[in-house]
Length: 242
Image (spheres, rainbow, N blue to C red):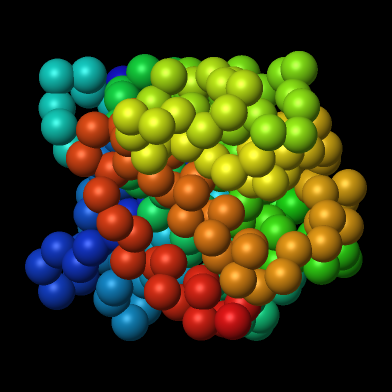
């Protein structure tokens, strides 16, 4: 059965001399694996760049629910990046977002709201004219709300801490474990939850503090998402913004 869908390429590997196998998060079918034949031929009508991670595409696919790998019949861009391919910082953030998505979005079920959020984030990363150093943090905080990790961060006072093992606020730091944000980072978390990216880009964080808060958010993900593990892209990201 042929289906016309939108997708975000999250992983791509070479297969044989001329083909590519890719994982795409789609608007109607969730995460799916596809093979596209002939894309690496010299005379291919399809650019190999279309099946690289971060690509936003429209596809016509042969869909068979029982198959682990389906085939792409047609593919074209749904959005053409203007800045991401030529900007080291935007590219590093985009790869970071893609790796996070790859480690968290694993189900072959449709979630149009989540798909739209991810699609909008990639387009925003490409289009924004505001400073982007806070973008990875804003993305992680907002993405967590789509993954069922929504941090309950309300009614804060000066000493409040976010206990990420239970996803709730405590009046002070617990003595029996270390799974919590400092009061400062708890208040930052509340701010990033409430603000859109443009507003959050104006939050002033020093480089070390930004890096520490980003690592705290990754620990939050690691605690709640099985096999989330370490990110390969984090070292590049931190080098770019050091």
